[in-house]
Length: 554
Ligand code: PCG
Image (cartoon, rainbow, N blue to C red; front, top):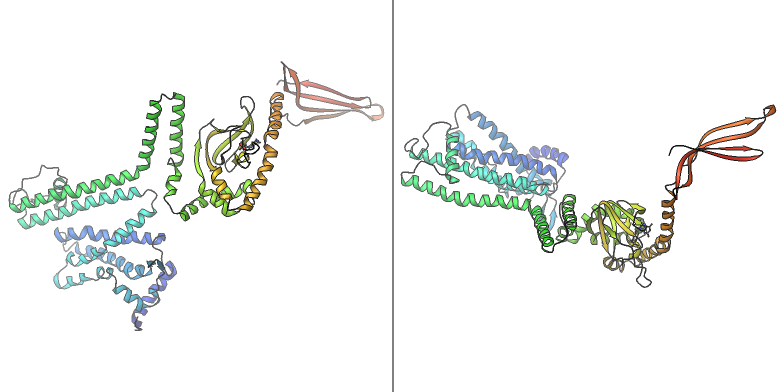
């Protein structure tokens, strides 16, 4: 770039650039910077003003001495927005060249800035041809170059779509806007044709009554949407105009309405897939006369899964992404939970990340057995939401422990080898309410651990410890203990000291002490032990102590 000094440009632009720098920083990332999208909204409003009003101003007689000052004011505001965008925002945007992100250096000197700007199409759009109006009269024709900024509208639309949670709302709105704009243009053409043929010169043309724009728009709606009921065209010109309208209406409107259907179809694609899967499954169950009870559970599973996660299979969605994205999402959602799991303490962090990527999400219904004692353990589970109970006893009525979100289960049998039968489940685990679980396959775990021998040792050691603490022998002792508790009822409350009083003998010496407690007492009744609420007094004297209970109403 030649080293020419444009000091006068520097003088004008420098303070504005400094101000922009202090607010926006030196460069803007157009993909992520929300301030850019906010600014694009303003630019897009300015563009829409130009594209909607320019044809109307060109055709309809709305430039009158009264309205012209208002048009000029709005034109100037809109033009200022465009100039700010082209001169101050666009050169600040980062862009990609040959795969490299170019953090623009254009702003470092006004010389670079000028060369950059001259290379931009947008520059043509801000040339103030309006000034020619001084010579040739005020007309919107001098503003046609403003329409070259159409790219800014599409850019706004793309950026907005990429950040909206429900982008289809915008897409439907935009397509509706296209339909209305086509009608708007057609209204302008109809008025132009009417003026060319002479207002009220035939039945077909606009008759000059009422609000011109409204009447012409009404004509456009009836003619482009092929509603019919229009005055018959008489001359060749009128017939050609009307036929063109019908053809344009058929092609443009059918494609726009098709586009609308695609947008709505894409928005409800998940819902349609869910419905189709459920219908298919119900039809299958009916074909094989599956009992109603099972059918209802399957339906409940479908409905709950859809309500809870808005899709039937999360992994299907993630599989389309490159590994690095899946890792980022997986780490963001689950790493904090994983990192806190006691079983994995001391394991390699990278191993945890590898595990995250292999997890599958699954939902169980209330009362479902996730794991059955004695089965071969092929998976371990991490609770994402809800609770499970480790149960035992003859009718699985004894709850050993309730596990909540963030807990792991099914790991004991998974970490044992099949050699001595250690790979069998040591307890029953039942879903308590709806429960959302992550499942890790034994095959996947083995594949991962091959790469992390130290973590493998840590887990093997923990597995042996767990087996000792919770394995079949320990489980049996635990079960016996719980059975005992079931026999003797719940744990009694700690005795509460109710009263202490002393008995004094001759000379005021303490001879005996009575201590009264209130508590529950275990006694045998109707062939079982029960806890009965009672107060009891213990009398202590030099002749020994005496215990006297008084039962209260249970
Ligand atoms: P696994 O594979 O034996 O299947 C049953 C699971 O229940 C077991 O692994 C443990 O992860 C889990 N569990 C949680 N608490 C206990 C307990 O107190 N005893 C037993 N046996 N298992 C428990």
